[in-house]
Length: 141
View 1 (cartoon, rainbow, N blue to C red):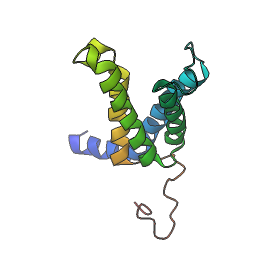
View 2 (cartoon, rainbow, N blue to C red; view 1 turned 135 degrees about the horizontal axis):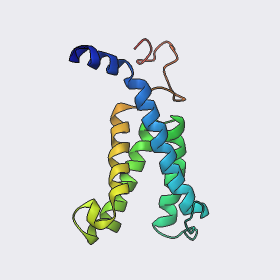
View 3 (cartoon, one colour; view 1 turned 135 degrees about the vertical axis):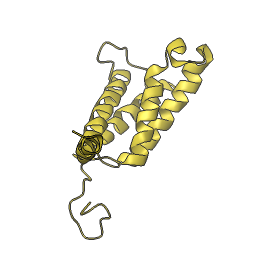
View 4 (cartoon, rainbow, N blue to C red; view 1 turned 60 degrees about the horizontal axis):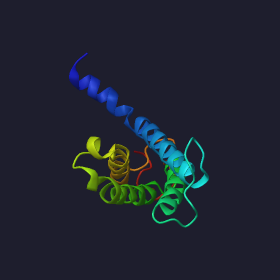
């Protein structure tokens, strides 16, 4: 199989794999938020109104579910990316330059993963997937 044929085959599956990536990223993010807000999954809940942890947990849970479902994905991903950048620079960066030094690997990966979704969109399997509606620029793609 030539490289161009392999590339073409992989490209045809890109929307599906992007949709699966979005769903997994959203599920992982929502679970982080649920653990922070409700104290599940082996984590103690943040006190209601505790800045910034409780608010971040609410954003993680809400945006994680929206990204998982593929509803307003770009907006939810933009907010999520910003929250993770804030978390990285305020909570982790003071402890060292690199994520492996400062324990900020998760926020860094979440930040860049969500930024990718801001620019690439939700992919397949989303609530806002192309339905062939007239005027939808993605229809027929």
